[in-house]
Each structure stands twice: as structure tokens, then as C-alpha cells.
Length: 364
Image (tube, rainbow, N blue to C red):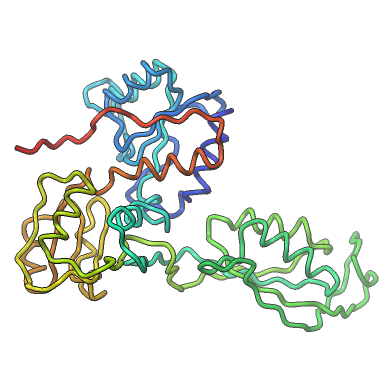
């Protein structure tokens, strides 16, 4: 298949619009029209990973962390990122990354952490904001089902675990057709009154063009009346971090042992003992210390993340058990998420896990 087919699928399955403003997810290197037969999945793109892709004849490297974060003014091979790009281009290897948009998914990095720890009642810690749109349109009564189904099939109407969510109310629409028109109902230059249904539903912002196209193509009118509104609602199914409960309360020692075992984390840092059992766990893969206050207000007994700075430990003192299991360790299972997404859609496409250890940190 072509690289563009894989990219288009991933761009929508893990929406690029979900990524943070500083991020650079999506296709990093490669021509969309390139034919691809196999992919190598990794947490980080390093020079050794590109060499591994060459040795294994992989056409594309798919990573969690992007190789290009900031703007590149020169590609001369002076930095690791520049050398990676040069080698990838020379060997016709594409690079695609799915970073903070994958973090935001309800099947994303933090939820994978929670699942590995065997937590139950898992919910998003900090819900996604500003990504919902409401669509309102007006449909002739006998065309409601056709138009509604087209809009739903385009991806609108999802609320939590429910789909085909919408609201309808009857009313009367009025219009007068002008010169050069071919009205579905009524006559030119005359007011027409039509029994219509006001239909409304919700959708993610990244689906706007697709849903509006489906609406217009399925609607019988020449000129389709519709409104789009940005919603302030939190989307409780998507966002950063997650929170859940162990199957049974754990001592701090047992909980730390569980984290160490599941994430192969051999250099765990943690704050002072608060002297209570672990009944509620907050997690955020990668560098999640900005969610400390959210974790505390959620009622969690412990917050597990990576890259915790010195003064953050003072902020947590007496409020919550803080655990730093490592950036690499907390996000290592992102490769499983990407693998599962791809093989589900393209079961005959060859996908391999990288065998290169990209963790830049060693422990004594």
C-alpha cells in the first residue's frame, strides 16, 4: 500500500488535532506516494533504530516521540536529529510519529499504564477541552433518516460509549427560490413553507469537513442550511492522564514493587510515606508533573509519572505519594498501542517491534 494510506488512517485514528501546540506529530520524513510493505515500531527514533530499519528492510519507522520537534534551519548532520533525517532519506525510509495526540486517546499511553497495573474503574484525569463542535441542520421530514445516517457514518454523534446521539424537533422552514435555482420543493419567486426537522448532534473538530461533506451530499436541498458551534464541554473520554483503583488496597511497598515489575523500572524515585493504603491511583505517561494538582484534587493516594523536577517533590509533600518511574519506562508500552491500531486496520501489513533499547538513561 502507499504511505499516504497508512498516514491518513493514523491521522484520523489518533487525531492530529488532539496534539499539544508545541508538538509535531504526523509524517516527519517521506513522500506520501511511496509504496510501503513493512514498518518498525519504536518509542524513539535514534540513529540505531534507522540502522535497524535498514537491516530489516522496513519502509517506515513509526514512533511515539517525534524526531523533529522544533524548526530545522539546516540539515548538515551536526545533530543526531539531522543525521537521522539524512540517513532515513538516503535509504528511502519514512518516519511517522504519534505523540501527545496518542497521550490524549482513551486507549492511549496513560490508560495502557493503568491496564498494566491491573487498575479498575479507569477514567481520564484531565479531560480534553475545546475539541467538540455542535452541528445543527434542517431536513425535510421524509429525508431525516437518510441525512442523519450519513452524518453519523461520517463520525458524528459519539458521546462516551454511545453513538448515533442526536436531537430532533419538528418545525416549519421558509424560503423563496431565486433566479437560476432548481428548488427541491416550491416554485421560483414564491415563498414556500416546508415541514422540516431541526436536527442537531456533536462531533470532534477534526471531523468537521468530513461530516459537513456527508451532510451536503445526502441532503436534498440545493442550498443546505446548517450551523456549527464550538462547545466548551469537557470531553471526559479523552485527555491527559488517567485515574483508577487497584483490585484491592495496597501498601506503599507492594505498590512500588508492582510499578517496578510492570514497567521494568529499576530506579524508582518516590516521596515520603503518608502512612496509608493505596486505594486510588493517578498516572500520566512521560513528563506529567504539571498534573500534580489535578491528581491531588481527584482524591488519588499516589501519582505516578516521569521526569519530576526537584521542587515538585516539595509541592507534593503531605498531599500525595509521588512516584517517578522514568519517562521511558512510563511510555514504553506506547509501541503496543500503535501496533494494535495498525494490525487491526491492515492485518496483512508487516509490523515489527524495534529491538533497539532507546532509553538514554542507565542505572547503577
